Amino acid sequence: MNDFSDLLRHETVLAGLSAANKKTLFQTLGSAAAGPAGQDAKLLADVLTEREKLGSTGFGGGVAIPHGKLPGLTQIVGVFARLAQPIDFQAVDDMPVDLVFAMFSPQDAGSAHLKALARVSRRLRDKGFVAKLRGAGSPDAIWALLTQDEARDVAV
Image 1 (cartoon, rainbow, N blue to C red):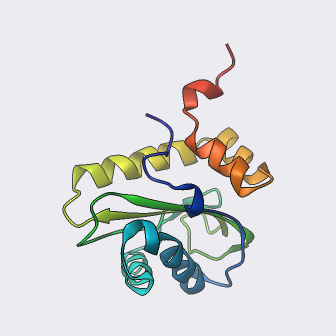
Image 2: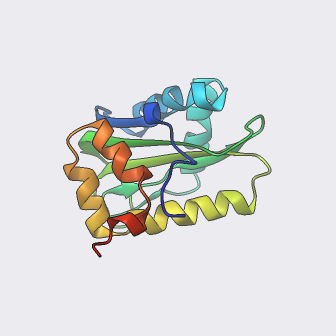
Image 3: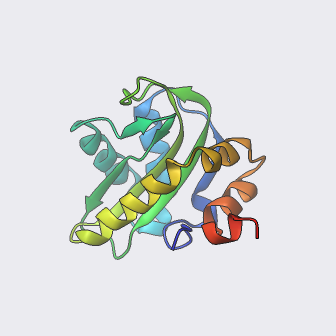
């Protein structure tokens, strides 16, 4: 499966998000995930901040996948944000980040967490797909791109 309908809800796709830095970004991502995750927004933001202290989750090309695990979750919850202005993320290529896919996993998710991370990473390394996300005009258009299966993206 190449779509993200199992990780995202329509309301967890954010477009034109303004964030001055990682701290404010993580607070906003935590707030967006709080309802679907059934968790406190500050706790979710703190999980991302703690993971980021281990090393930047900005993997290049203006994309970051901040993530973390916490007890009490029953499923993986994702939030996608396209930022209005790129922010410094100390990414591996030193480029600022404007596309962020945050992922919150149950504490004991193990391989499910790693598989979801790999799937998101693989899709967000596709330069054509990333260009479509950047060009999408609305949260609805971004949602459609993120939740359609890649196979339907290929011309027959």
